[in-house]
Length: 324
Image (cartoon, rainbow, N blue to C red; front, side):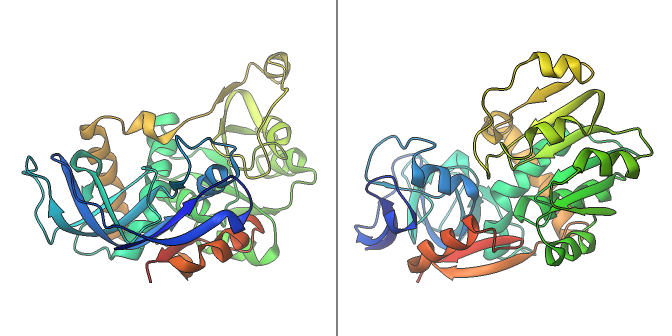
């Protein structure tokens, strides 16, 4: 049997039901993973509530995990039992065991343990895409990072600083401000009040070439006002709700701005792209340039409590779920 968390109907954290299900068997091109740690992400909330629709109900949610290969399908030749692997962005992670296509997993370096791998696959590869592909960050640039003390935010701040950028972090509390500073933010702003004016003061009026915004509705227009002419707004999350009803003319009025809404899977859809991005991620982590902050660990059976904490913005860094 396997421990799994399923959603039978969209709703609040109470919709997350921990169940015992038959242990899956790997298909011809699949591997069976005994999962040692599962990552918690805000996209899990979107699937639980129905903002993002599940293909069928009931369904196991969760997007990333790390563990050990227990069995392989008949046609698998690149993996064997005992291999340490992890994967990002594959719905169905909230379980103690899962079968998954062999091309969707990557090997974990010996220096990275399973909780760390589970904490960085989706978030870390998202950061790699944001900084190296969506906008190729250059040394000397100044950027704005919303939710700078969150799981993605802490990785973004560190990696950007490692690349030579000056990071302005935006957080919700003074406690989170200190965490952002420790992880690479040169300037930290608490709250959204007068955000563009404060950014203007920090930059001497120059404003910014790029803003990374995972908050969504509540911060979108303020973020646009932080951009220099022809700047890029990277909207990659909806923590406060989806951005709707924005007239494109507002981009012209603010200096011919650009806006993008990237999705990680676009950037790692090919096996070679996944391997290259993961190698770059593992390199900055094993070198110490990026430190992974696991702020919370919950048993998988207490995933509802983990969701409540995430939605209340009571978490810092990454959160991982440990199968009971």
